[in-house]
Image 1 (cartoon, one colour):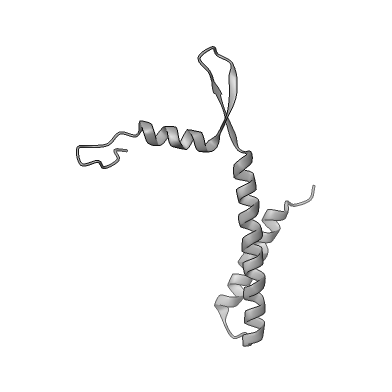
Image 2: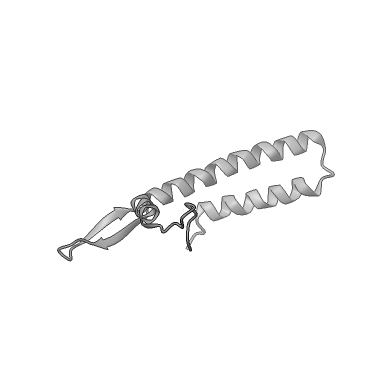
Length: 92
């Protein structure tokens, strides 16, 4: 089974960051590695955004039937249900 593209891109990005942090590279080489890193970071961000859109949570409706609810709806519900103290601070 082939390794997913996201993991490969992330691994390449981490390697580029390590090389840049070590220093000692010529300016033109550093700039090229930086440009490559920015492109990899953008691809990783797009892959994560796409995956986030696909995530859904199955919940039971009042009738007991399962229905798909986008993950963001759950987060908003949790914020509405959050308990706060008299100063408006979230209680955990």
